[in-house]
Length: 480
Image (cartoon, rainbow, N blue to C red; front, side):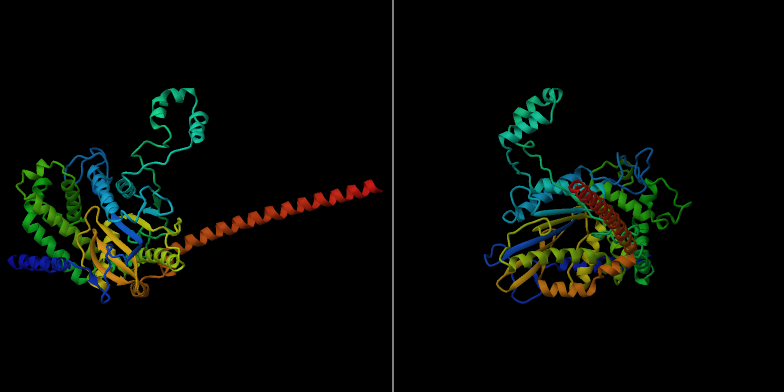
């Protein structure tokens, strides 16, 4: 057992040693490239931010009758963004605004910023909280006197007016109250932006890569070692606070992903500052156990999901993300080359936000580590990845930042060329994920719709022609 423990500790040191290798300076992929916002020769053209949602309620093994989670803590919902998650994203938004204060407008501009989210409440609300932080000093434009009269007189009857009279006087010409920001968050579509290919319900083809990862001998060994270490170090405490007999259930921690559920739930409880008296009374070191669970989750995602060495599943998952980033960057470069760098429209914004999950953050982490040897950290709640497009006298460059810490700078063309040689094409994704049939259905519907329109046009033309013919005949008869 001592040998196994030493092996595990050695593995953990090896696994996290790359985290200590983060340079205080930007890692320069090309010689003599310096991307500093203070340098007047450098101009920022575009930013892509990909962040994880904020702290959430547990979503695994929650009892729907008692609303107690897997380890007995009371909640009101399942998997939803909580107060700490909202606060952290609001603060991240403030930090984002400070970094890009001279790049973003003071008020929200639909042509300048585009926000994408997965369909989960926690990612949508994280994006909204983040935007409130970015535009916290947002001042709404005033309406004209005529516009005020239209809204006050045309849309409200006397009953409504009596109820909102004080508010109308207070708001004067502002269209909403000060401090209220209203901004759109777009949900990605399965056929459009495929940003959730790690989910088997979105992409059944990812299953083979997940199975490949799970069956790798190195992954099995890594998972086995950390499970054994967890059982030896924390097992007695877990059995105690879970109120389970270790003698009757000696393999409980190794069955049905129970250890993952325990750690995921404990992370949510601990990070959200919940009281856990039934756990603290076991004398377990709660902070150490929290960090151990973070390590376990990291290993489960980075190795259990994506393999060691990483499978092609990583390349699949990041493919639509990088393709979208490059599409936006290409548009900004074309505008810059045409001497129109400040032109903005919804298809060519200068700032795009994607609110997602730890699984996609992890996939980008692993890909960049695999291809460019860039270190990463545990993708905790609110983790942020930034890809900035810069221009200076020598060309265009991409700066990569992790939680706003600069990690690397790439020549844009070289960076794009290398990644495009690795990632999956759209057609490959369509076939692998079964999206091809959905696109065919959409085209079939569009074709049928066009056929219906053509039929209506033909009928209309027949009717018009008949009417004209009848009119001509009537005129001829009158002349006769």
